[in-house]
Amino acid sequence: MEKNTEFVEKLVHINRITKVVKGGRRFGFSALVVVGNQNGKIGIAHAKAKQVPDAIKKANELARRKLIQIPLRDGRTIHHDIYGKDGAGKIKMINLWVLQIHIM
Image (tube, rainbow, N blue to C red; front, side, top):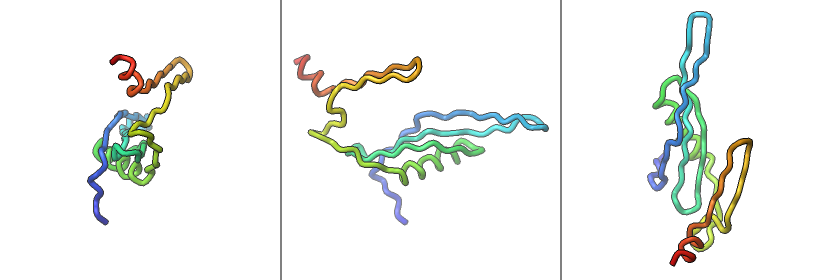
């Protein structure tokens, strides 16, 4: 099995998990990783392990298995502005290509 090197891997977040047991605390780690080829394929995965490198490795492998294709138009992924809200969090994704035309 050859390793595909065309994908870019980004580590988004590492979280320390603590489990309290009778003898004390057990520490584990979780990693959130995004993998993509910057041409419409993306995979996102979350994995847990006892050590940080193992969690990152597991998340990378899962993300490569869960690749999806995002339709592109004119080399862009966002075709229009998107507004979203979940709980107290708000997000606004703006089409940068249109924004550059208005600035010029």
